[in-house]
Amino acid sequence: MSKPLFIKLLLLVIVFAVVPFALEGLGKGYYYQIATLAFVFMLLAASLHLVTGVAGLLHLGHASLYGVGAYVAALLGSKYGIGFTYGLPLAGIGAAFVAFLVALPTMRLMSIYFAVATLGIGQMLFLVFQNWVDVTNGPNGVMLFDGIDLFGYAINSELGIYYVVAVVAAVSILILNRLSHSYYGNALRSLREDDQCTAAMGINVTVMKIQAFVISAFFAGIAGALWAYTTGYISPNDFNFSQSILILTMVVVGGLGSLPGVLIGALLLILLPEVLRYFGDIRNIIVGLLMFGAILFLPKGLFGEVNALNFARRILGSAWSEDNSEKGIGWK
Amino acid sequence: MFDPYILQQLAIGVSLGMIYALMAIGFTLIFGVLNVVNFAHGEVYTIGAFAGLMAITAFAPPLLVVLFIALAAGAFAGFGLERLAFRPFRRFSDEASLKSRAMREATLMSSLAMSIIAREAMELIFGSQFQSIDLAYLINKPIEIGPITIVNGDLIILAITLIMLGGLQWLLKKSPIGMSIRAVSNNALGAKYCGINTDRTIIFTFIIGSGMGALAGILVGLYYGAIFPAMGFTPGIKAFVAMVMGGLSSIPGAVVSAMILGLAESISTSFMPSVWSDMVAYAFLLATLIFFPQGLFGARRERV
Image 1 (tube, rainbow over the protein chains, first blue to last red):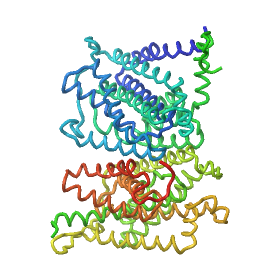
Image 2 (cartoon, each protein chain N blue to C red):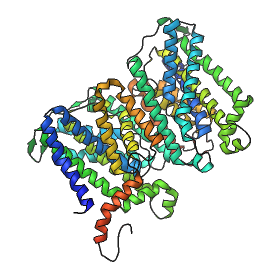
Image 3 (cartoon, chains in turn blue, brown):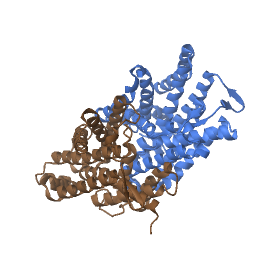
Image 4 (tube, rainbow over the protein chains, first blue to last red):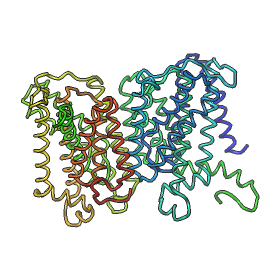
């Protein structure tokens, strides 16, 4: 068995057999909550990775797009009776639509101005969640009583919900992985490094940025729907600026531009506060210190981009070397 | 002639604008010399408010002394911030890395990390609720002028801001340190070759900018009677908006934009519920970024 295949199988076994087995063994709802929280944030971090890590756009309002997805799913579910099956993709499409509207005017802005524009938009969406009481129910949040209902089969057990969340998150992360390690991803990386040069090479920079932003928002919306369905209650404070910063921290600590690193970062930042629960309130300070330390001492992150690309090259390279067509694909 | 209600709102708007102007100056000065945004500026504002509050509860000094204590605390916070979050990322001083995006974004995120640490530490120490302030210090005693009622805080804020703005103009135009600040913000490398100590200049810039931010913090705290650890976030964003509107490195532009922002915000409360008034600032931000990328006052700047 080749090594890359072994790694893939190992990950699949861990996610779909070892973790659920351990969770059943521990047998408390609390551990299931942490596991689903970890999946939601891994998906969020992976979607931010496409915009901030690969395309190099510092995005400070990601949590608000996640919030759009969560509100779409929760409102469709509680007011119109549209269940999980259609609510999940609709949440993604809703978030992507908002992101598209947002992207049209802001995508011509450069680094810091883009960051500030996304911060402003994030705050505007947060104000809408909080103050448009007729629709979003304001600071009281939205309750979602329906459980997960997949094509007519109601899934009620904690283990079943875990599997639904894990499958949705794994498939989404797989898609993001293939996007960021493809010619498309390479084009995004090139516009991160030098957008004028990229434009001179004949790549439409603005369209690429809008696409990356919208795709990332779609997956953030999916994560929002998962969050709304697993917790059953959402409120505006789940989607405020500090959540955006938390997601950004995961990406920075893990390594800008490195998908495995970002997933490690997300796991670390979700699990560490739970481990440190006994320290009480200082856990948020630890998040800040971790971010500062990562920028200062590990500027490339826990699992840097170069390592991640080598890793991807080993995995994808074995498939490419088997491809004997004349055209030839991938790295030599 | 005018509706008294509008006049009343105008008076409040002037005070708000003055506060934003005090903060926006700090942003503008720091952006001028370093070409980076200091995301921890809002926390300096909070630190100023808390330093003043601690002075009041500890030994109840006169108001002027409280303001000086806040100013000193802000200056000290600015010094520490520069050392911790900005200095370590200035290891490379050639022109390419001074302008590189990676460097700028590293300092952006390190200042963001510092602001999280400072805010969470303050929440841990003081709790996240509103702090109680000695009522004698609140600057909201009403004064009636003709048909409208203003509070003495409006006058105090106006006077202090005018003094600070005048002092800043003198400092930047006449004093050696001010001239070196202007030189560094014009061309950091050139200033260095002319024998200006850029590190010292940067530290002084942080001290001056953060001192003014902290002063704004204690003034707002006493004006509204609300001091809490997360208070710096919204004014920080609005001051940033004012800086962007003013054209990034222009101090008069930032002050005028801050006044526009304050007035727009207070007038807007007569047309819509006050919870939506924050929306005005964000709308201004987006409109400026999209339609006037050079800033309303067209200062020089790189492409956006």
